[in-house]
Amino acid sequence: MKHTVFFLIVFKIITFSVFANDLSLFNTIKQAGKLDEYLFVSFSMSDQDLIELSAQAQIVKMTLVISGFDEHSTDGLEHTKLRISQINHSCCENKGPVWMIYPQLFERFNIKTVPSFVISKNLNDNIPEFTKISGEMSVQNALKYIYAGTNYSLIKKQAKISYLMFKED
Image (cartoon, rainbow, N blue to C red; front, side):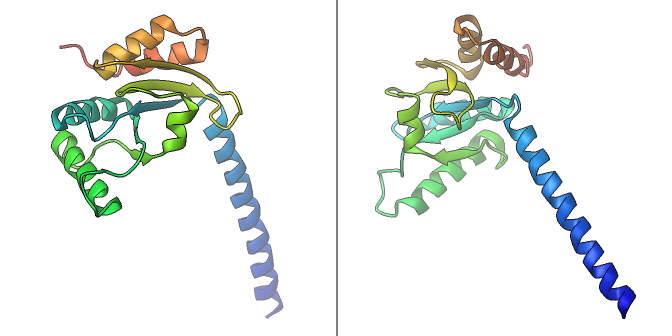
């Protein structure tokens, strides 16, 4: 009985210690040098544009961001989930990109038109470093423009890495 209790206590301490270390390691990895890539879109865009951009965003693991629910329905969230599901199925056989409903991100990056493409560092800081490009273009072209136009070396590097993920035709 004494050995069992001792074993359980030691096991719990070791488990907690490993978990705590893994969690801090996870936070370090997540924070260290990871740049966020966003594609800001709207359901006012044509389905074809959303499908094409979603397929391209999936290649580089770019997150699609919308500012709210699809306004063409009274079901709000359910209809929005259905639209996203349909777009992801059409573009990528249900392996589509991640989507977020995040109106504050539109404000943070001063997004006024869609599509807009952003690569950001230090989103948790008050003033994140980011580069943004807006206009009707492919993800691949947006990455070229971000690469050419940014003054931030890490964003330039990430734009190049993501751009190179596209296969040459």
